Image (tube, rainbow, N blue to C red):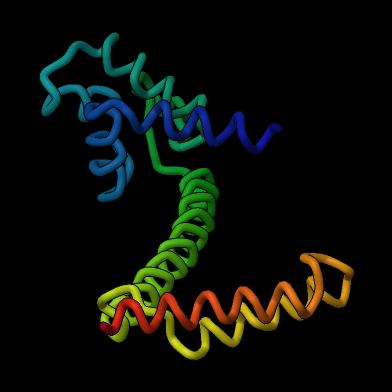
Length: 161
């Protein structure tokens, strides 16, 4: 739960473009609040609030140097966020690969059997299912199975004529 709260703060702080710009600037090296506020065109008080949000998220560390407040990056929370993102990126990549494989297999089956005719493999599988049902005392035994097979054969002949 604690890790989730930390991630929530990191992502919330990154949601603002001004704060993202501050992080980009601090990537070049430490800067004072005034040096960060000037290019953004905001007041010192406004920038101090943005820096405080970043500091609360653990992304920035500040220290008083003389009369100015010096800011620098603290990358550990970004590492945690990247680990979280990477985990879900791999998870979804695997799931999407599986979905792609399913559709590729399905498309291949449809291309080899464009009219919906049953392949010998499908028929063999269906026969195995019937045999299992018969062994369990299922669908009426061998007599009913023979009658079903005879009906299917007639149906197949009717379709070819």
